[in-house]
Amino acid sequence: MISCQNLYFTQKNSAFKATITNIKFEHKGITAFIGQNGSGKTTLFKLLSGLIKPTSGYIDYDGSDVFMDYEEIKDKIHLISDQLNLYSHLTVTEHINLIKSISPIWSEELEVKLSENFKLSGAVKIEQLSNGQLAKLKLLISLSRMPKIVLIDEIINDLDLNTREYIYEALDNYTYENDSFVFVATNIIEDMERYASNIVILNEGTIVENDTLDNLKEKHSLNLEGIYKKFISKDKK
Image (cartoon, rainbow, N blue to C red):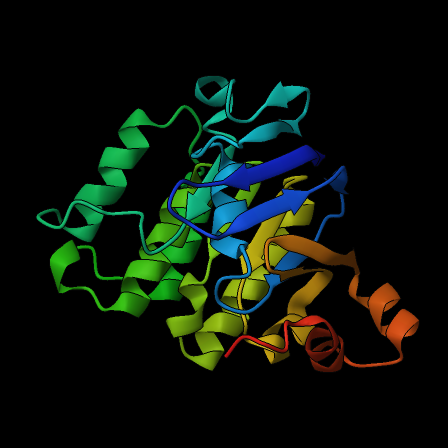
């Protein structure tokens, strides 16, 4: 379980603020974080991963403060985003082997399985990969390290429908087989209607809904797109 305790975050020279009070994330399956650009998805993922410090409050994972105890738990919580840079001069195989050599846990079985399904050529240099191929490599490197919490910030959006379907099915299986959490930030609502078990809706730095998809649909008598539109800010483009 991971929980936010009286969490507040603000930055100098920025009007954005995030306020999240005493919320727990404890459901297996894919949890989708949806909200307009600027709603706080990326900021919340950075906070949940321990990469930035909240202005006040804290985030607890299994009895540890994710920011204060970052060095102890960093191998258990992985943030995968466009800001995660790879070594462009290395080949795919060289990069995988580099990360494998410094990782305390590595699943050879999952590496082989994902390599085959993603159809990544080991001889190609990182700098020659498309955005979609980079996303696949980042996912392969992260999941093979067997984290307990995987935070995926938008990077799946650039992939074709068939690849997205495979990835979401693989991620859903990963959560149950490894007793792990998978959090996905995306605005492709139709994907989340099919593959997410749990939904978090953010609006202007605040979580306005956090429940299973089935419970939300029953509560609002709407599909996910309708629920989303009900909560998003009307004054943002």
